[in-house]
Image (cartoon, rainbow, N blue to C red; front, side, top):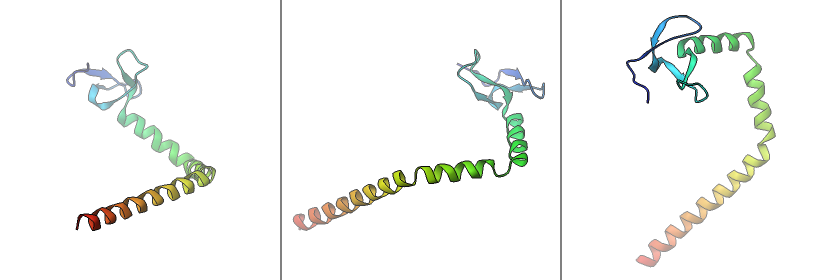
Length: 96
């Protein structure tokens, strides 16, 4: 169990920071990332600026890859909701 008043040194910025500013990493002995959240955010922002279309391309490919699956799920969901509404109406009419 972590105590929030404990401190840890970030391997990137070398600052002594409270452990609540580190993300979780279950593979580490102390259960925390090497780098603080601030350094991780800076690295991610820099990566996104260098490769602006990378994430958008991934999202688009994933959207197209799973289109049929998503449409099928949506149809089943809509049918289920329609049946639920009908059963509610029937139950209300039977109660009256």
